[in-house]
Image 1 (spheres, rainbow, N blue to C red):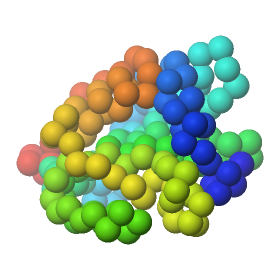
Image 2 (image 1 turned 90 degrees about the vertical axis):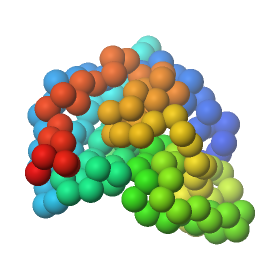
Image 3 (image 1 turned 180 degrees about the horizontal axis):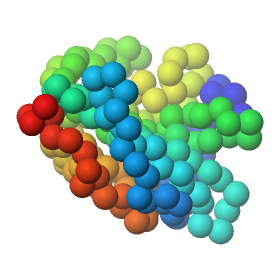
Image 4 (image 1 turned 180 degrees about the vertical axis):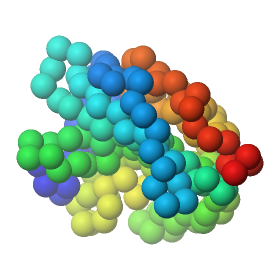
Length: 160
């Protein structure tokens, strides 16, 4: 599927589709100045596969993302959603909205896909999470993912 083929109905169907984490005990990796975990996720009773990922800055507690991508045949990934930290400014160019240093959720939308933008460019502010751990819990709840992976081995940015 090309990003331009994305529809809001498809995103909603994928959101509601029950999903299961296949490797909940994946190891933490350090890459440069961030740490990450990448989980394999599959649809319960379906053929769809997904990649659940978290990234956390080692230096800046508010710099993180928890996201979910659809893994397409051949391995290409289409990011469906990202729950981001409050470490940067965000701009929704179509809507002309701008906000700065607040937690926010990016969601793939048909309107951004049709304009050849990053499909998950659109974002809304949120107060539902304040850390990568709580962002992952919200993402798992919102996108029907079980079990919620444990991030207990994540290094606290304030300790490094």
